[in-house]
Amino acid sequence: MGRYDPSTSILAGMDAGVLEQRLAQLQQAYLDISSGAKGVNYTYTQGDGSKSVTYSRANLGELTAAIRMVQAQLGLICRPRRAIRVNF
Image (cartoon, rainbow, N blue to C red; front, top):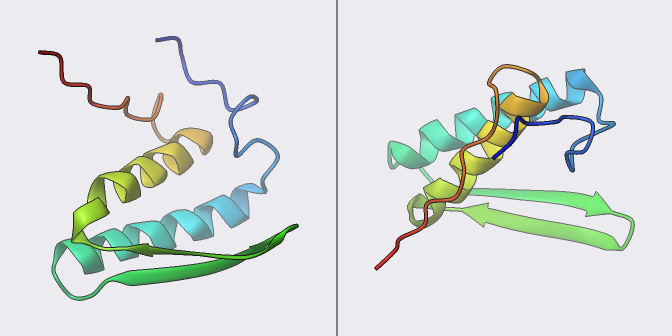
C-alpha cells in the first residue's frame, strides 16, 4: 500500500480547524464508548438531507478507523490503518 495522500482523500478540502474539532469529538466518543459510559449518536446534514450514525462497543473498530483517517488527513500519522483481513 502506498503512502497516504491527503489530496485524494474523501476529507480533501476540509478546513483543518473543522477536522481538529471532529477529531476531538471522535476521540471523546471512543473514550466514552470504550469505558462503557455510553453509546454515541451523531447527526449531520449533507446535500441530500440529514444523516445519523450511532457508535457502540460493537463497532469501535469503525470509530477507530474514522479517528485514524482524520489523523492522517491532519498529518498526525502517516496513513490510516488498513482493514484487517482473515485468510483461511
